[in-house]
Amino acid sequence: MADITASMVKELREATNAGMMNCKKALKETNGDMEKAIDFLREKGLAQAAKKSGRIAAEGLTAFAISQDGKKGVVVEVNSETDFVAKNEDFKGFINTTAKILVNGDYKDIEELKNAKYDGEDKTVQEVLTSKIATIGENMTLRRFDKVEVTNGAVVGYVHGAGKISVIVGLESEASKEELEVLGKDLAMQVAAMNPKYITKDDVDQEYLAHEREVLMAQALNEGKPQAIVEKMVEGRLNKELKEVCLVEQPFVKDSDLTVKKLIENVGKEIGKSIKLSGVQRFEVGEGLEKKSENFAEEVAKQINM
Image (cartoon, rainbow, N blue to C red):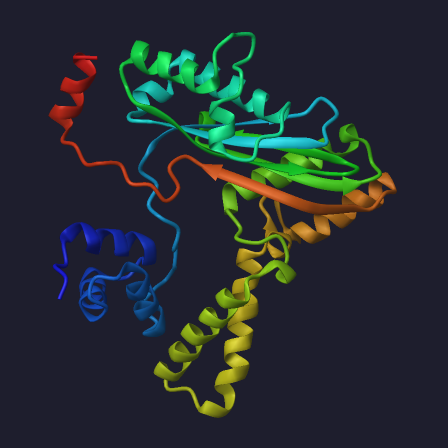
């Protein structure tokens, strides 16, 4: 039996909004497995939410860049040890330049990017980063990047929280990038705020659907509902959930009377050209990473001795 710590209970509470004792029981029942504990609480009808994304604890910045013709966008994340360094202007300059290198090149992975020539210098991206590590006195790493491209239309980006979240969205259309700019920015802001898992229902992973049906079925049976109506209930709840996790089904954050799908249709009618949301990338600093725990005194001492 795994030891159930107070921090594990706290993490489960933050993910589900369930009571402390229920969280402790769920962790005991599932031998400390966080994902199974979330399912356990949901099946019992005790979880008010199920935020399964990993804890966000690492520091650093994200950035995006759009090509001059507007048809390609990239988003990149660089991690640092402390938020103090993430606010450093030199660090900000490095990640923004790296994003421009990415959008103007064609790199398959981080290793290729590290070996690319840094803008205007005879050094590689990694050599420049290593130099900044020596100057700033803190470890920094190029973590990941991704891109969105369109054949026609435009890619539009949005950065939130001074670089904590960066989003790019691709809009396929015969419309110009100027005509698509406002819609693209609104959609990117929607993605930043609501963090959808999928663009449309057609994109939903079948394993995800099977898992959700299983959880919702157990939940309905635990509520004592008759078997005859459980399946209809499950499909109803699943459809409601899909409206939350699929971008085009979500209520538009600026006008809840509109869905995102309807917003795109309305803008298309206004400009007289159809618009299709074809790609989305959202990076939030530290997704899936955990920062090593340090007490406050140690952190202050480290910064003083930099």
